[in-house]
Image (cartoon, rainbow, N blue to C red; front, side, top):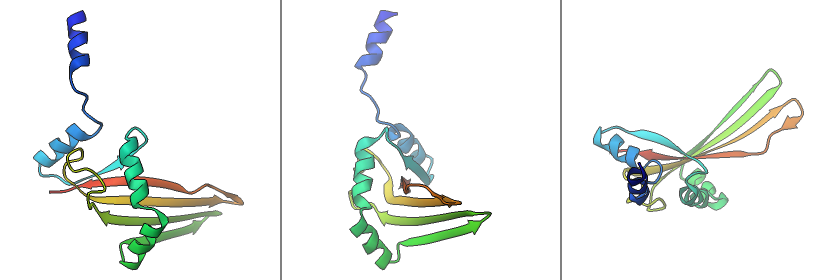
Length: 126
C-alpha cells in the first residue's frame, strides 16, 4: 500500500486540461474550454491578452460583438472578444489552442448593478 502511494507521488503531474487536450485532438474534435482560477498562469496570460487596449484593437478589427437584453426589470450587457493564439498561450502546454476568447458581462436588476464579470476561454481546433 505504501509503495503505491509513493509511486503515485513520483509521477509527473499533468496540468489541468493537458491530457483532455490531447484526447480531444486525437478524436479530431474542436472544443471550447473555460479557463478558471485553477490554471493561474493561463488565466493571467488571457487577462493580459484581453486588456483594454487589446480589446479596442479587436473591436476595430471586427473581432468582437455585443449583446444587450432588457426584460422584466433586468438589464444584461455582454461583450465577446476573440483572438488568434499568437503564442500568448503555450502550445506545448495547451496543444491545439488556436483561438482565445473573453466574455464580459454586466447585469442590473432593478437598481442593483453587478460588478463586471470576465470569463476566459481557449479554443482547441485541428
